[in-house]
Length: 515
Image (tube, rainbow, N blue to C red; front, side, top):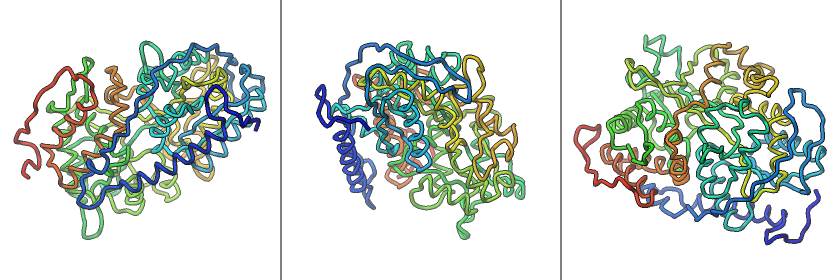
């Protein structure tokens, strides 16, 4: 790699930046470990440190975008214009060996085509928000970042991402080739804050054989979930009704509750900025969450791993999961035999509408990026895209649906990539389930984004506001009636000069209103 050891333009050189980030990462890991909630200490007190930092509000000048014409697979070996840059730094929010090898091969191919070296940093998703905030302060932002939906609008509003450049890349690639819903989710003043790369449906898995044996209805609504959890709950034999993440420092704790809340049409905030948590839809959603988790889940906090293991070991009737569990189910010969998949949940059997929950990864170009970053983004969504989508393809539904010439090339091919020992999802579960898993991800009605409040949602996920307060409730610090007000007040604390102040008081009638 061609890297100078001198500092330029007041920034650290690449080696210094990499070393600095490693030191920062280790330090943050030690801090997180030291701050784990201790027995008898509320998670709120254990995580009260101010993690939000003042972001750089400056926006980079609009950049010229030298970009290749989109190509169909197999990609053409064509040179890419890339300005005068000699190196780009790219952060990837995946850390598996397979991802490292695949992305390194893409970086090498891009370098061979352009002469621009690519310095890769593979960063754990849990550390990504803090490392980005630190990079702003230390003036060490990379050129390109892969990041989840939750932080995309916040980082654009705070000057970390450059929406002008991202939007220009989308136009160059063909706006109509992307999932329109995924673009709309990250709209900032008429521009897309980042470029939608891939996504997946969060789903509820259930033991279909147990349900058939006990003549239980498909658990796609509150009533049938509760009925099934109660009927199949057998703690003496270590079998539980439902296992979902409940740990206060996990983003998926928050995601699981948001999915349940959306099923009851509980919206966090409206277009005017008023917080809606105290509305009956949200109260009822929290009461349902408390009832099913408190009564029919294992004791102690749960994680994604414990939920996965419980389902694979036959110790729970239902879990909330990402598609990353599918290869394990294939290996256990259970995916097509005794596992049901639900992507849309309703509040009750009479509800006309149901809610899905889409998780989307975006490719963001930072405000500190070299103009060559646009060229790299164009490469990512053309020559490099098939390779990226093939790694753990079960959770990478393409958000670029196809090319200008072949508008559905990528999305129609999803499901055909092998997920284990040559088998693909289409062969295992059939085209109907494949269509269920790949449809509607971009149209997900996630909290706040459709209402233009994505910046607040980023703060809430950065603080893990709901993950913390939900664990406090389940640990006995609050009953469900008080928890909704705790959540309300903590969200209000994130909104400067909130325009709709009230003094809420708990009302009787909710589950667990004593204590």
